[in-house]
Each structure stands twice: as C-alpha cells, then as structure tokens.
Length: 43
Image 1 (tube, rainbow, N blue to C red):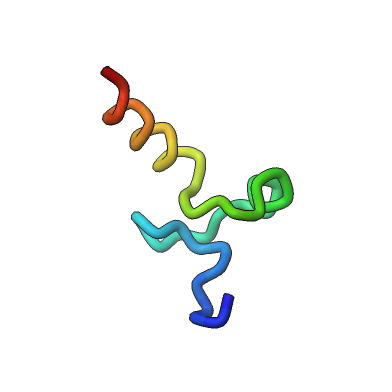
Image 2: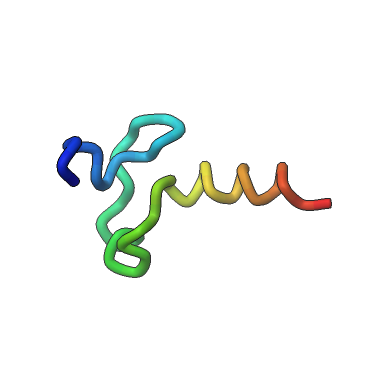
C-alpha cells in the first residue's frame, strides 16, 4: 500500500477487480494472470 501498488496486478499492471480484493485482500494478480501462473506451475 505504501508504494501505491495495492490493487494492481504485479504481472500486467492492470487493476485487480474489487470483488477479488474483497475475497482475497492479499491477491497480487488478477484472476487471469493467477490462473496462468498456476497452469505453468502444474506438473
């Protein structure tokens, strides 16, 4: 928050939707990017 980046996706820089932040305040990525990261990490 201090850096002014809360609510912004760390990968693409787009705003993370409010409903996602309400559900997961610690979210660092929007849903699309998070799914992409999870797919890449899957064995």
